[in-house]
Length: 114
Image 1 (tube, rainbow, N blue to C red):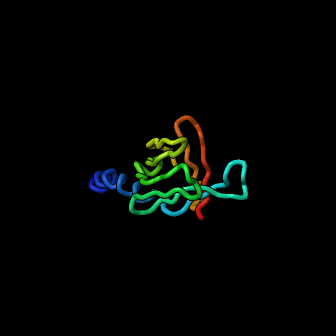
Image 2 (cartoon, helix red, strand yellow):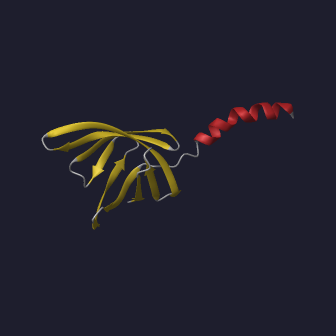
Image 3 (cartoon, rainbow, N blue to C red):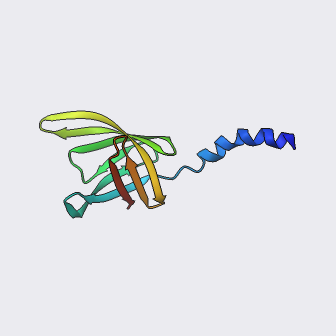
């Protein structure tokens, strides 16, 4: 019986990592002030990211740091300048088709799987 208890704690981290939600795919939300239009992000399994209907915000890569953390890299384009950025979010998924990304300052964006 003692051998089982020694092995179980070693297996727990492996079991926890396999339950990360699948966040790859296209995620969209209404454009603020223009609810008949959508915008969002496409997260590819190879780490590439792509903006959906956002000409001045170009996502290019993403990395899931843990089951509940994501970093997205891209460029903000406007007024004759391009600004590189990395945004880090906490991921919450109330179901497989809804993803809420929250920044440290509390700003939330709710996306629906397309």
